[in-house]
Length: 617
Image (cartoon, rainbow, N blue to C red; front, side):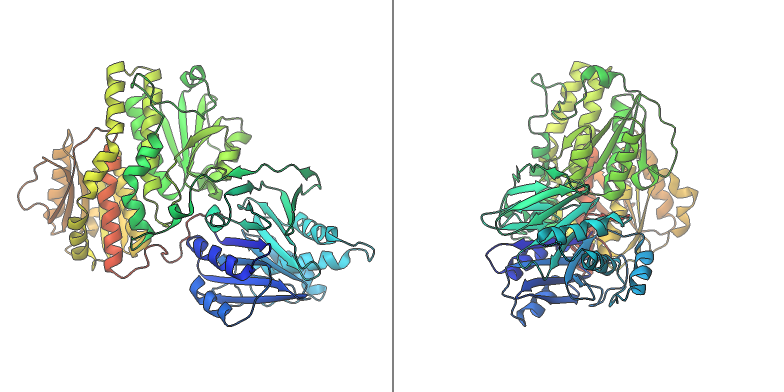
């Protein structure tokens, strides 16, 4: 959940590292630090707080070196202090280390190292690993010379580690070199012209190069200004594959928008078009996917789908469950990825496993994927980041193609996931009993989604005004039915994430089975009330809240008529096909949450205690 940047080359390392850290700040922003290797010494600057605090600190020092590492932290072990910020330096002064992940057995290692005379300045597991590397370096025979001593000390230390890591290390005895390694925490190597940039996310290196090597678990990379080499933990040489990043640095810039979240909300029509592009059959009756790696005949044998994800992606799974069961008539189960691997869920052999993660690095989702594959199930991934760990380890999958999503609260990736779920429902439905004409209608509905979202976005000024009237509340309910119940969960999550207002989502009919006890003049309720067969049922639930003086915000489709005075605020969305409704209905709650957070003065793109990619368990 933290950010890593390393640089080896001819340029001033600190400037390049700080630029990368600014772009990685959404991954963790409790504290930040940089270490530059210069003249046989480790120059370190690190501070609690945002990267801008570190920039001011570095400006007070002269760090002319051309080799260095930097880090943004999201605290796991130890509080948010200068001492706990990375990089950490070994007590003998020879090594500096940055680390993403969690070392589960650090306490035992710390006790052992303490008995050997090593001292500690922080509460972190990372400093323990740094001293362990120093310990193995000191143990190397006197005749062991050259870079191999540096690499082997890192390798031997990592053999003792239980847990996860993405690390980069410097050693004073090797002034133009970095050794880095990964296990369940992402690391990407950017291959530039006479320079190499190491990062935990492509956004930190895209300004320097588009040529990258995605490191795999158990790999160790050694960098010098002239070359790099990769070996495994078992000392086997690895032939690297250099890929190319297809998006541009401008895609990860905020532009004229106040926040990345605002930008990404308004990018959704284009993002949806990109997700759909080239994925409908020539006759316009079904979806097609190029990367599933499952023949149509195999798909017809599937008796059950199991979807796993976390957070917002889990809500997308719930919508997919409704649409697949509704249109493809195949049973679907949805599980939290974090729970799946610890349960012994009975699975039929004809179960197809799907995992969803925007980043493709969510550790709980990766663990669920690995557990499913361990048990012999075919596992597919829905993911937005080309070259991610999830994409590499899945048997096949579907890329979302929405471009980089920087805002911590997911928006365009979420609606893209909803769209992919609808396309899967269409794809499987047409294999089973959905007619050609129904398929054509479904495809046309999906193609209309970008235009419908643009119309929904036109409500932004009105929603902003509504949000300003709601910003003083401290509790809210979100209520919906069928495919919009997951949207109630998502709306509540968005509001909690960025405005810190306590919010809960429920099926509208369940409100009277307990949550109604919360209703008062101080607790507004947001209702999804689209026209349709259960519209009157939803209106009845609204009447129950109104009778108890609860404020009501109604999100209705154009043309739906509410009883006069029932809703205190009304937001309209265009009428649409059932498959597209969750996508269009997402827009008002995204905007509502965004504008409420802005009105409350919250840091929308960097909400407290959260990070974009959750890479620790």
